[in-house]
Amino acid sequence: MKHIDEPRLETDLTYRFEYLCDFIGFGPKDIEAIHASAPHLAPIVPQLVDAVYDKLFQYDSTKRHFVPRQSGYEGSIPQDIDSLTMDHEMIEFRKQHLGRYLTRLVSDPYDAKLVNYLDTVGKMHTPEFGSKQLVVPLVQINALLGFVSDAILGTLLTLDLAPEAKATTLRAFNKLLWLQNDLVTRHYQKTS
Image 1 (cartoon, rainbow, N blue to C red):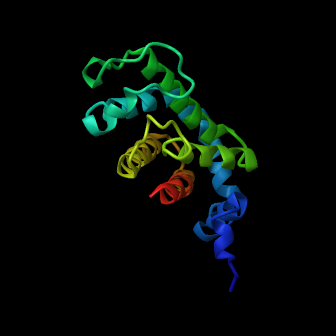
Image 2 (cartoon, rainbow, N blue to C red):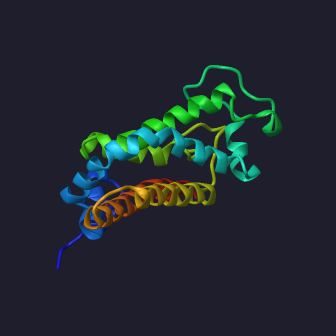
Image 3 (cartoon, one colour):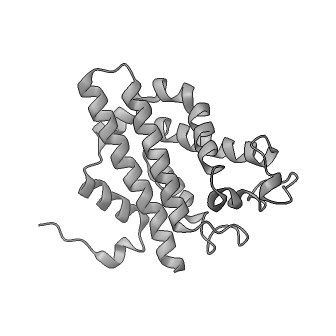
């Protein structure tokens, strides 16, 4: 039986990530499968991003979070939820962030730098670490992660891969998205 220093899971990101990887079974073969999917997924990142934003704009509970100024965005902001359109320059700015996130998942090495990035994705949506104006409730983050997960897995199912490679890739992304979910949820525990 492995001993886990549970308090350290809350203070040491690397220790936490390594524990989760070990527990879930996310390892080099999963990373290899994810990277091997890059030639298939990278070209369709714009369509995945558009699908995500189409979904986010279907609900006032998610669309409202795009009205306040986004961190790093310097342009004009919409006056209200009704005046925010899909072609607004702030939405284009946000789409670029999501596109880079998806691209990094399939291309970056899974090292401390990427783990910190995945953790920052979780931090930036909370009031403690992100913009004080932009507080996205956990239920909306979970809805988004569930949708993104389904979109990625659904896309993978359409790829012309050998059955074993397809199964390996699906399982790898499933594990990865559970890791990302933990690195989001942990920051909400700190703010509740």
